[in-house]
Amino acid sequence: MAAAFLTHLTLGKVEVRSAGSAPADSINPAVVEALKEVGIDISNEIPKVLTTSAVEPVSYTHLRAHE
Image 1: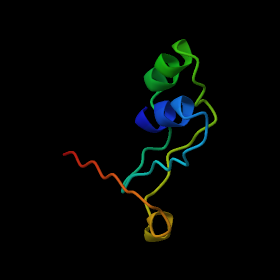
Image 2: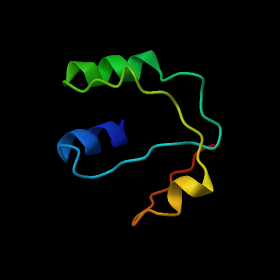
Image 3: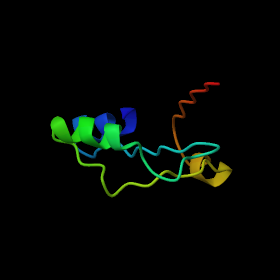
C-alpha cells in the first residue's frame, strides 16, 4: 500500500519498487479494494521477489521486516 500511495502522490515522479523475500502468490484482495476506494488501481500488480539487482542502482532503500 505504501508503494502505491507514494507512486500516486508523487504523480509517478518517484520510481517505487516493492518486493519481498517470500512474496505471496497474489496481492491481498482487501488491499486492492481499499486502494480502489481512494482512486488507486493496483489490480494489475503482482507480488515480486526482492533481489540484489533490484536494489543496487537505487538512491534510497527502505526495508521493513516483520515476523
